[in-house]
Image (tube, rainbow, N blue to C red; front, side, top):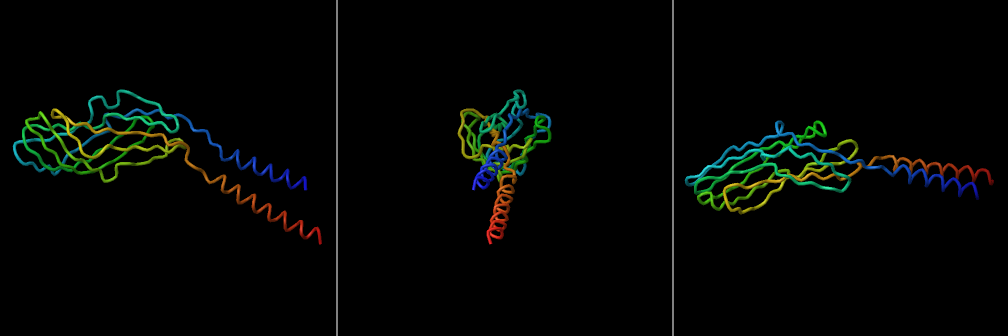
Length: 196
């Protein structure tokens, strides 16, 4: 009976320790040169124009996120001039130099209106605003803001939000659990045969 208890306790310790994964902080640095935004199929009514570009300070401030932490920053700036409105399609790439090869690609559409560039508003909808990536064993989520906005002036900003969701689950604990159940089954069968 003592052997069974010791075996079960040992198995439980191995199972619990294997499930503990230490999440490491991740440092991010947006890549201004590798990131871009493009407007296309812009249809206007009235005397107006719409332009979009990367935020001027994109990539100037690196940031580090521990598990469960988020950081938001300006990614795209829309500029409306004149008086009128219209519709548009947009594609954007948000790239990072750190971690290397991290890149979110987005597309969407929207509408806008402006009055002499004094008051502007619009609606932006991304097809896939939330994307997830695996970085150094951690799950990272990048999401772009969307929805309706009204601003005083002619410039509206779209923010990106980066979240470190933590360690990616690995199948080891499940595998160990199955192994443990199998060993217990074999132990039970051999014990029945021994008792006969």
